Length: 218
Length: 219
Image 1 (cartoon, chains in turn cyan, brown):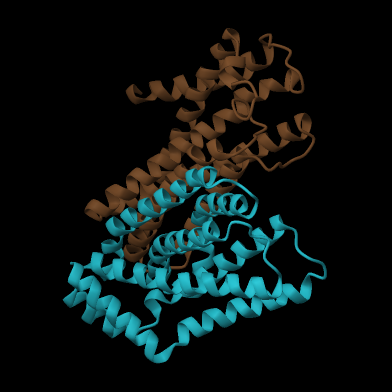
Image 2 (cartoon, rainbow over the protein chains, first blue to last red):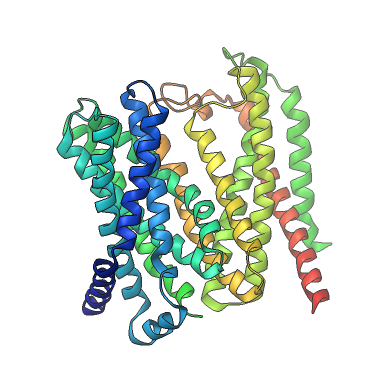
C-alpha cells in the first residue's frame, strides 16, 4: 500500500515536473486574480476584507487545481491503474499530490498578496501554518469531490457546485483562525481552530478512503 | 387499516398543535412576545428535515452495500421531501425573523446551517440530473450524499459552538429555548415535533410509492 502510494505520487510529481503546466497555470491564475483585485481596490484593504479575499481566491484556486486530479489523464490509463493499484492508494497519492500543489499555490498567493495588496498579518509563522492546514483540508475534501465530478462526466461545470457547499464548515473555521493570526492573538487561542481544521481534514480523508472505491470501479 | 394508526396519530398531533399552539397562554418574553408561538410550527420543520435527511443518508449507505435500486429510490425521495420541509422552515423562519429581529436574514450559525443544508441537497439534485445512466447515477450520488451529509452534520453541530454570538436561543448569552419554554408550551411543542415528523415520513412514503410505480411503468 505505502509503496503503491509512493510510486503513484512519484509518477504524478515527475509528470508535473516535466510539464509544469498545472503549477504554472495555478500560479498564473492566482497572480492574475490578485492583480485584478489590486486594480479594483483603490484604497488599502482592511484586514478583515484582506482575509476574506485571500481565502476566497485560495478556494477558487483549490477547486480549479483539484478539478484536474482525475481528468488530466487518458481514460485508458485509469484502467491500467485500476489493474495495478488499490483504490485507496490512488486516492491517497492524489490527495498528497494536491496537497503539495496547493501548498505551493498558497505560498505563491501569499507572496502575490504581500507584493500587490500589502500584508496585514502580524503573526507570520502562525499564518504559514494555517496556509499549510488549508492546503491539507482543501486537498482532502476536494479530491473526493473531484472524483465525483469526474465520474459524472461533467467535470468542470459540476466541480464548483458540488464542492462549495461541502467546503463551508472548513472555510468558516479557516477564516476565523486566519483572522486571529492576522490580529495580535496568542498562539494558544488559535490552537483550537487549528485542531478543528485538522479534525475536519482527517474526517474527510477517512470518508474519502471509504467512499472512493465505489467511484473508482466502473 | 391496521397500519393506518400512526398516520392518524400524526394528523391528530399536528391538528392539536396547530389549534393548541394558538390558544395556550405563552410567557410574555421581550422582543418575541406572541410570535413565540411560531416555535410550534417553525422548529418542527427542522426536526422533520433532519429526520428525512438522515433517512436519505442511511439509505445511501445501504445502496452502496448492496446496489439494490430500492434503496436509491428511498434515498432520493427522502432527500426531496426533506428539501421541501427545509423550504417551509426557511419560509416560517424568515417571517419570524422579520418580526422579531427586523430582517429576513441575519448572519447567524443556525440560519447559515440551514442554508448550507439546502445548498448541499440542491447540489445533490443537480448532480443526479447530470447523469443518464441510472446505475451510475445511483452510485455516484450515494457517495456524494454520504459525504455531504457528514459535512452538514459538522456544520450544524460543531460550528455554532465556535461562533461568538447567535440570535437563536441557547447561544451567545441568549436563554436556552427549552428552559424558556414553560411546561404548557412543552405540552404543545413535543407533540408538534413528533406529529410533523410523522407527516414528513408519510409524505416521503407516498412519494416513494409514486416513484416506484413510475419506474415500473418505464420498464
